Image (cartoon, rainbow, N blue to C red):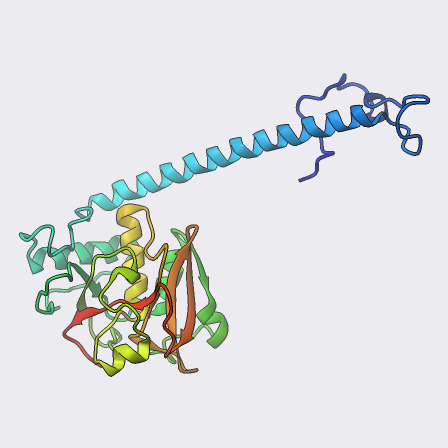
Length: 286
């Protein structure tokens, strides 16, 4: 911020030059500068105050604009998704598999511009605690998901920076949608740390043969949840995407911080604090 920039409400006549606005005071103040320090400080304080007020006004205006955009988006999405219940097994039992398939077909059509047919997608057997269904569309890539997420919120993708943009050819996952679409059931939790795998590393989950969210599943989970609520997952914790393995032996992790979704990686044996895999119920196993 340039505190000596032009102020919208100068203390002096705006027609005067800068030297006339802060006139030298003979025999008073800082002789090396030739200006009255008190007058200089008063002007600086005024400019800082005005700049702060303008910044606050800009922040409020930006927040209002973002809110309007989000509300418009949610209205658009509400036409194709029964907000909060459209893919939820527990909250709305009458949601048949057919209805859930239709919700996801419309989701991919509206958000990605992809025509899908999920009529043959089979759901895993329902299990208590796993209320949300996720359908992965055939052929969708990790980079497509990251790019689409960036249309709605910031994404810091440390994984692509570390191993290159062609993630599809190097990430090995428990399940793949490159040949066929499939569905999983996940826990409908904002924080991974409140799930059933507290203290588990990716290695622990694999040793126990527990299916967990892959990187793609976690990204589509994030995107759909955001479009439904305007909020992010894992604000206080981090999802270890134990269902995916990077070529360096590490596993991806996903979290959010101040509206920015972070995609990085950790050693497969890492477990600490709020880091935790998200378990899933799946029919397809790689």
